[in-house]
Image (cartoon, rainbow, N blue to C red; front, top):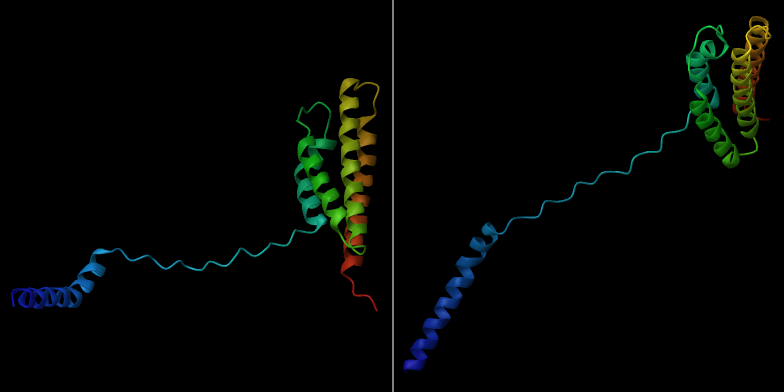
Length: 160
């Protein structure tokens, strides 16, 4: 009889814990926050070569082709980085896009040649006719920039 009463008492305690305890346990346990879904960032299209070239030329052409008595650092590192970017994009470009990158590389080469000519002129200003040479270099660079814009326009023109 004692075991029957004990068994009933244990059963009552177990049932009461099963009814009362779960809400109390869940209140103590911190809930895991639901992770917010963030979509992957959309790939931003790379700008056309003329955009990068216009920015670079606008900021640096007067420094490169300016008077020799004005000492200004050549933006060689920035130009090398720009040229490397064009070369990389050229290697991945479709056949229709390649002419614009080839033209952009030609502009970069002309800018590099202009920096070299300025450096030579600064070494011996009396021997160089920098004013005339810088005018010719400017015309060449502007012509190459125009050719690059034409190549971009030809790539975006729909074919029939």
